[in-house]
Amino acid sequence: MKMNRTAQRTVEILKLVSRRPDGITLDEICSALDMPKTSAYDIVATLTEMDMVHVNRGQKQTYTIGLAAYRIGVNYTNNLDFISIIEPELRTFSRKVGKTVFFGVRSDNEVVYICKFEPENPIITTATVGTKNPMYCTSLGKAILAYTDEETREQILERIRFAPKTERTIRTRQELEQELQKVREAGYALDAREMEDHMECVGAPVFGADGNVLGAISLSSLYKPAEDYDALGCLIRRKAEEVSKMLGYLGKSV
Image 1 (cartoon, helix red, strand yellow):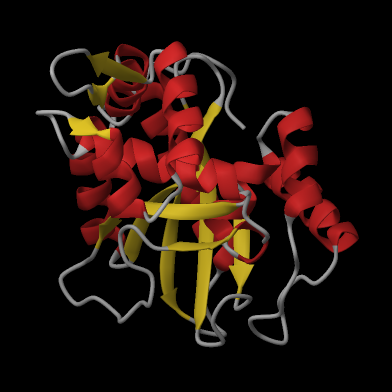
Image 2 (tube, rainbow, N blue to C red):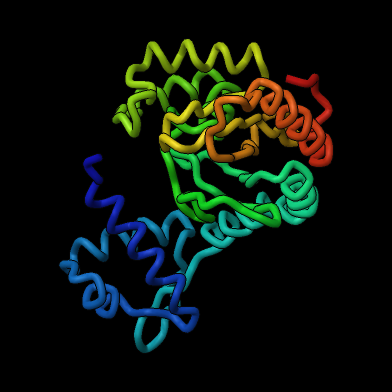
C-alpha cells in the first residue's frame, strides 16, 4: 500500500512529541526526523490549531502533546478496559476445551490479536499477541467482518488485496462475500486451513453494549479429520454470546 507522505510525517511528529513530556522544539523535530523546517512547521501549526499538540511559548518555543490527542488516548484506553473483564472467562474456557483461545479486533482491513490463552498442553501457533493477519482467511477476521455495518464492510472489502496463504485460501471478493453470508447464517466463522495447512480455527463475534461488533474470539487447534468443527463453531458462538452479555450487550443472539 502506498503511504501518504504528509500523513506519515504527521504521525511521526505526534509520536516524537508524545515521548517528550518536557517539550520539544521545532529544530529538534526537524533534526530527529530529517525534515525541512518549512514542512515540519506547517504540520506542527496544523496540529496546534487542532489541539493535537500544545505550544509552550517561552525563550524557546516548545511543543507538548495536546488535549485532543490526550482525549483520543484516553478513549482508546477506556475501550480496552473490557479486557480485564473477559480475560478470566477466556482463560478458563481455554483450559476447559483444551485449545488455544484468541481474542482479536479489527485494525483497518486486518485482525490484530489482543489476547491469547493456552491450555495446559498448548500446541504451537504462529499467532502471538500484537501480530496481525488478513481478515479474509482467519476465523476472527471473518466473524468481525460479517457483523460489521454494511458501509464499513464495503470500505474494507474495497481495500482487501487477496493473496493465497494455502491452497484453500479465499482468493476473490465474491468468494469472501459468499463466505460472510454463511457466517451470518451460522453465527460463527471457520478458518478451514486457509491461513496455515495444519491449523483449523473457529471464531464468533463479540458485541459491545452499543450493539456494535467489538471483536471476536476463536478456538485454534491442529487439524483433525475426525473433529466436528461445526460443533466447535456452536460452542464458540455460545461463549461469544456469554462474553457479549458480560460487556453489556442486550441484543439478540447471532
